[in-house]
Image (cartoon, rainbow, N blue to C red; front, side):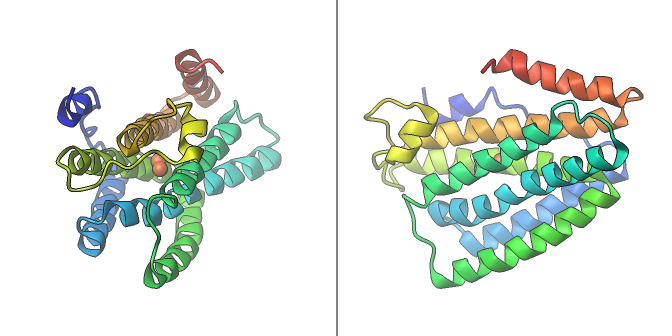
Length: 228
Ligand SMILES: [Fe+2]
Ligand SMILES: [Fe+2]
């Protein structure tokens, strides 16, 4: 099966509904424009820099949900753990890609600035409108799925060498011992598709009348899909 065929089951972009969605979508497209201009075809470097950013929102969202639970003395229905797990999963993406490409000094400075901007910027958006914040990540992840699909295509076309998978990736995703970069990118893309669906579902849950029940529904659906 080729990469394009494997990409088919991935859902298309969701329809925009309301100003929050439009803002989140345009914001995502703006950042995508800069990422495309900056990295052009260097997918290994792109993955590293963007994964350092991707690890921030789950931690910020989890932290703010934790504070919210303390403040309101309300149960979180498992959301805090879910968001912290997302941050950990993104960090593992970074730990994997750092074995494949090495960022240059300029990219390291960029990572530093992006982390600061994202911590404060995303934190501010999350405080003002958690719906917008989760929607932004939903759209970011749609772009991530698209980017990793392009990465797969470069591997299939022979433009990127299909090197052996790093040990850390084999252990984390329980891949076969002879797994290659292509298998890793497929696993990462599946994670990103999961984050996309979860974050859109979390934004949707905020709009439901019975929010705790809606939150529980998201968690239960996840547990049913991935019983660990
Ligand atoms: Fe990621
Ligand atoms: Fe992600």
